[in-house]
Image (cartoon, rainbow, N blue to C red; front, side, top):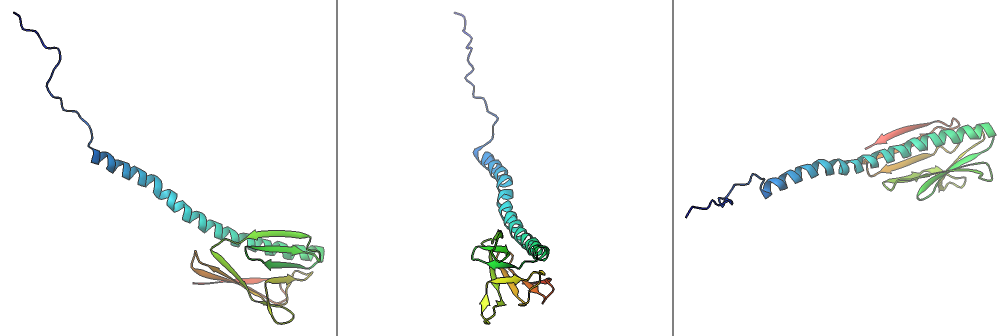
Length: 163
């Protein structure tokens, strides 16, 4: 009887593949390349949000002083708990609000007519103020204090940074 050729090869073939550990190592490396920039972007966004707040504050103070001068009306900058509001005119007709980021604490040191501290700075019809106020921004994210020091009757201010 002739021998039948076995069409199936029962010899074990070695498969060329990666082990489970090698696959896991590659997945960890790839996921770290994806996740690390996402985690870092959150910190970068916070940094730019805080810087954008200061930029808007500077521009809004300058605009308020210019509007007071152009319209010959008084204006004020009021510190509310979660925002700084800019008004112009006696009826507080024009209003601009700037939200304060949660990492920033705002402290006004202006004195009112009765000598008490108030949370607003009043600009006269020439865009000047007469109370020599200081505004302290305690920035917990950047771990520094930013101080706005206003000059009397000039409407100008200096910015100081303290760590």
